[in-house]
Every structure is written in C-alpha cells, then in structure tokens.
View 1: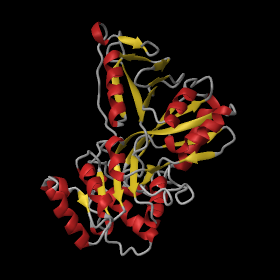
View 2: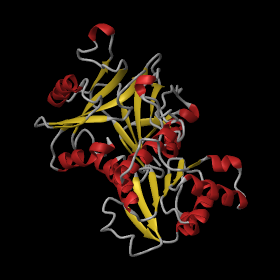
View 3: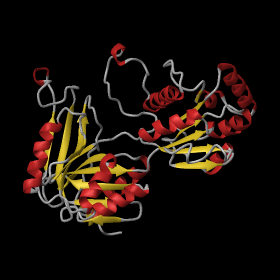
Length: 389
C-alpha cells in the first residue's frame, strides 16, 4: 500500500470511496509479495498492481462489486497448465487477495495510518478478513493503538515485535466463547524505508542516487566538501550531509537493511569510513576502486584490526560484471549487486537457472511470514479492545 499511498490519501481527503485489494498470502512463485495493493476509485480509476497484469482485470470487477455493496471479499487466483493464459497467474503461483471498501465511515483510522507511514514511524494495521461486513481495523504503533477490533494481548505484543523487523503476517485466532470458530487477521507492517548511504559527491553518486530513490531507499549523500555536496547536484537525494564520512557513521542509524556505497576512492576518507562500516550491521558495503586499490585497502584495514570475516563483507571493486561504462550503467551494476547480496541470489541469468524465480530476502529478515496463533478465552489471553493502552 505504501507505493500508492499518495493516491489513496488524495481520494480519501476528497471523500471519494475506493476498493482496496491487498495480497494476503502467496504460494510458490508470485510476481508480488504480500502487502502489494491495487485500488479502484468510485469513478473507476485504478492505481497500483497485485500481479503485474495477470489478474488485474478480474480484480477490477470484484472491486466494483465491493464498491457497490460494501461487502469485503477474498479472491484466490491460481494457475494450472490448462488455464495458464486465462484469468490466473502465468507465473505458476497462487495468491490470495482481500478486497475491501475504504471510506471515512468504514476506515476512520486511515488518516492516522497514512500520517504515520509518511512520517516514517513504524506502524501496523490489523484487518479482520473473516467477515464480509463490516470490515474492522486496528492501527498499532509502538505506544498507541486505536480502532474497533478486539485483539488478544499476546497477539498485540507479537504484532508490536513485528514493528522491529518489518514482518507482515496472517493470524488465525480462535473466537472466544465459540467452539471451533476462528477468524483471520491480516497484519500489514509498515516500517521506514531502508537507508542507502552514498559517500562521495561525484557523478557516479548522482546516478546511484536516482536509482536508489527509484528502488525505494531513503538516500543520503555524504561528502566533506560543501562545494560538491549540494541539492542542485543531487536533486534525488532525501538528505545531503556535509561531514567527514567516518564522523557521519559514528552517529548515523544503521540496521540490517542499510546499504553503503563508498565512491570517494580516497584513502583519507575511505579507510576510517570502511573500518566503521565493516564493524556495523549493514546489509551491504561496497567500495569503488581498482583491484590494486582494493588490495591496498584490505592490507591497511587488516592493520587496523579487521578480521578476515569482516573483510569478506566488502564488495570491491564495487558492482556486478555488466560491462558498465557510464555513471548510469555503473549505478545499475551497483544496485544489482546490492539486490543480489540482500536477496541471497546468484546474480546469474534466469534462463540458465532452475527453481523459483521469486525468492524472499534472506539477508535482512524482512520477508513476510505466515503462522497460526490460537488464542484461548479467559486468563491472560482474554481479548482486549484495541483502543486500550
């Protein structure tokens, strides 16, 4: 939903009802992950995608039905050899999509949810997908929770733990007081965009900045030279910091989704910077330079006390072998290597490989999870109203 949030907010602000289709679960190969969303407005305008074009036509019809009667629906799209090019997924997977009507009456918490996502505050929205109508929601942040959905205390705690990892989930919980009765809760977790730190205000950095922003990173360009680190040179950067690189890393937030590209290729900047970067939890660390430059760096970093394991995390010379020559092509090769590292993939040509095309990330632990939580009535697991602190 984050990708289409601006459009959704514009509709909501104008009091235009819309149907929101969200992927709840996937099996085998799927073009989009859980959480991907498509929306259809009352006037028939469409934004977003859940399958890259495979099932959008069928979902559009479902969305119009939901807009007409207000009743939520769950559609499952799958494929077999016989109907691969019919209404289904030509990729061979299966997706479950939940479609709900959103307006000021059905989802009054939408404004608070959108505000927190835009502000970069971790937040989760829990939606009961079991009942057709009314669809009930609960929005949880670290210190707040509001909505009209009852959730057991243990489940609330589990959702809040997901705010640290960015994990979305599907819960199947027992309904208190009703034997053999369950309900399904869709939990969408929104965390701040992953960070990309680019060191060195050069033309290669400008190209990588554009691609990084396009790929969904919060991009920061850092350089100690104020004449080069300017908004005019880096219009796509979210932040531009004039500071010695290693000083910046002393206080900059770094987590297991952070990627670092060192493009300065100047030892007085690189060595203290790389020493700190390689001791961090960053998901990717790459440095520009020739092979002889890399060998000198490794020797100097060993002298600074870095271990073989630390140095093995350094991607240098930076980027994949794509034959890149221009700054733009080089940026593609760097971003491709970042993706390869974070996803734990081979970087090889898909036509020469076997197995699933779409695989979850293994480096950053931010992929969707699915589990079952059974909540028994009474005792410490007794459901609580979501607006309680």
